Image (cartoon, rainbow, N blue to C red; front, side, top):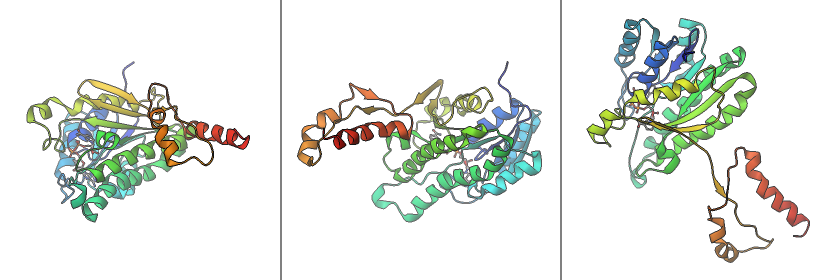
Length: 301
Ligand code: NAD
């Protein structure tokens, strides 16, 4: 059985170009009705233009698919979701993809550089999800993708704002997945790598051309299909490679009450020793070591 989305409505933000366009074309070619959202501004978040979204809608329609454009900024998620409701009566899939960069070293970063990145990436994803959520809850079905970045997972020089927002989206996704579980709403997070307007200033043209957004779209497609059970997960994806990430921590070291920075120093090797590791999957898992040490301390160990 082919992976298809017949009867489903997909909203893709920032779908006028780059990765979002690839997602919109992929969903439409497999039966979804698509809302192509794009503000049509510059890569640093200035200006707006309806042309980018219109061109993608035209391309979908020429291919026999169904799509409508929306030109609102993602900070006004209610207007974007309303476009889906007005045109198609529902929203099943939401791809929080729109993004900008305001790269600059931290010492030179202004409040505007920080706030604009938070507004588009974090507030934008919140706003669109918040507007789609009641529909997804009511229909007991929803698939949400949030877009993180290797910059957030690993850090990136000149991107303290972007890295903070992007890793924030992983926390958002994991909490959202827990809250959506009962109503069959699944949320996952991706860190893509693709040649787009966003990366063409930092990568050689040859690599930009080779790293096609179409190589990221199949993961987004599967994660948004009925048959995918994953939720709250994090994936890295680019070219012909897809991998899942999880947290890993050392077994850690235990201390007696009254321990000092000198004790921490003496145990630093054990604290940092990744030869024996744990993979906590939930906040509860993460607390087991602390709680067990607390019990031991109470009983005088
Ligand atoms: P892109 O610049 O080609 O696409 C981003 C789109 O978002 C643009 O069409 C832009 O007009 C739109 N947009 C920007 N602000 C908006 C707003 N406020 N409201 C609505 N639309 C808005 O870049 P891309 O590489 O396709 O990026 C897509 C997403 O993937 C972004 O969230 C980006 O941070 C993320 N990402 C990309 C890469 C990569 O390698 N390309 C790596 C990591 C993360």
